[in-house]
Length: 249
Image 1 (cartoon, rainbow, N blue to C red):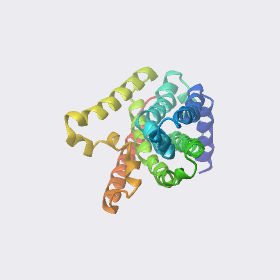
Image 2 (cartoon, rainbow, N blue to C red; image 1 turned 90 degrees about the vertical axis):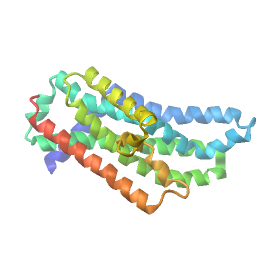
Image 3 (cartoon, rainbow, N blue to C red; image 1 turned 135 degrees about the vertical axis):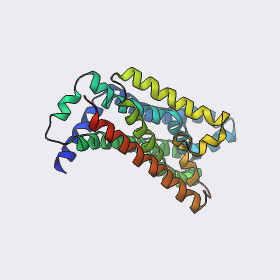
Image 4 (cartoon, rainbow, N blue to C red; image 1 turned 120 degrees about the vertical axis):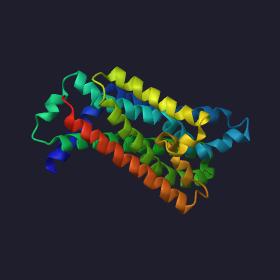
């Protein structure tokens, strides 16, 4: 357990030292702030814009979970696996006194930590920004965001683990990232052509947090979709672990 904790901390530090991580964290702060400034400039012109302030945390969550957060998790997964394979630094991880299963778990845990950090940072910044615009009108939107942001973590974890699996199929980062982007775009567009696919595609659940807002969905629907996402997480993690253990790095 100590080796897993030490390796996880090391992976978290490696991700933090990448410029992409800091850039995305900066975007997580800047986008809600810029949105707040734009809404503030227009708030006296229309009551509709004024009303959007209370929904700012949810608007930001919808934006980030649709594209920005899945892509950042994909970039991080690519850098942590195929990127390290291309740089020949993966062997340095494997020569440590730690099993491959724990090395893989440490990388996945580090990825999940950053997913949680991004969501927490986005919630804090967008909530503060929303209060600056809406004041007391923020109450309803704030209550929804308290439920929605934790709920958003589950589909993001599933998408991140699928990215981990795909990333291990390549020895260079560009090929892995291109494939992930193509798969993500195809999975988002396919339901428009074949609607039945959305029920079985984890990418269609990137907005799962919406079910937790307002009156919300029925307990049965939340229960079934929760276990659907959990099953995806378990399968993606298991497939990624098997590939990691058998792959010649």
